[in-house]
Length: 97
Image 1 (spheres, one colour):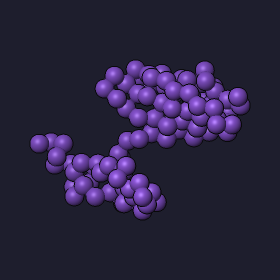
Image 2: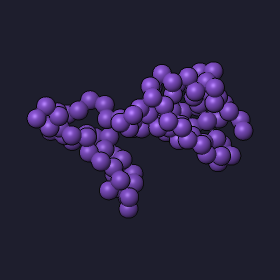
Image 3: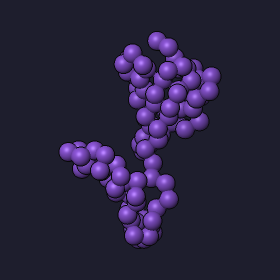
């Protein structure tokens, strides 16, 4: 496997982070990490699993007061037929309730 050709998708869970990675040949792997720093030590620059070309983190950035994010709407448009797989980030007021 050309370890410099890794693509990594990352999401948080209650005990840390989960990562799914693949290379240009379609070889897939996965790992769980207690801390984001450990994930980066494995997949970031000079990582133990190689240096990822792309690391995509599933995390809403910048919660809006009205709860409508343009990125979510664009993702739904792009994923016609699978738009229900895009979940809205909550409005800021919801998190403080």
